Length: 195
Ligand code: GRF
Image 1: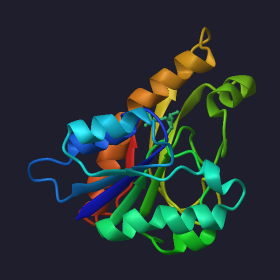
Image 2: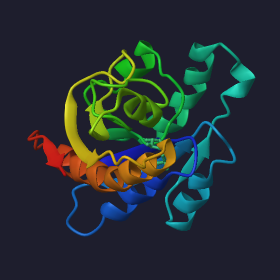
Image 3: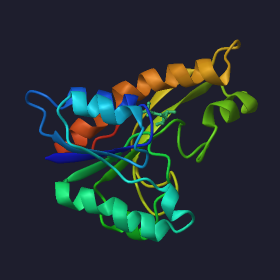
């Protein structure tokens, strides 16, 4: 199976995915694509011998469709079987997602369906939650929605700040996403639950 990964920043989840696709793993990376030419993850991918590309979203301003018309080109050229969003911070339209419906995954730093959108760690602290975590889900037109393929849970500690909580969740993201991708690539739909 060929896997394309979309990133916007440092790509720590992308690195975890790349490092997992070795040996008898049924998938191999075919592209790492970013909406930011300076995304740190592009260098990390190139260092690992993975093809990279970027399409800057800023010249398109609010014209999401025009941006996506450019963004989809390198993806179609790479002919992926699966597309993984990993710290990709642009909202994708239903039209774009429809090209990959059922084979596009995303990792979101909350126990969905709680806390869709941004600032999930601060919101969990604000709510006084005893537990928090991350979710991998199939991407649909609705933001941070779609069938949940796996979740990882972490405790919220009294002294937590959004930063300390985010760091604890991120550690679990790096375990959860590779585990879910492997099962997904093996077409094993049993959900993954860690922690
Ligand atoms: C992290 O906040 C993670 O929770 C979310 O995207 C952000 C950056 O991730 N998935 P990465 O280090 O670029 O993978």
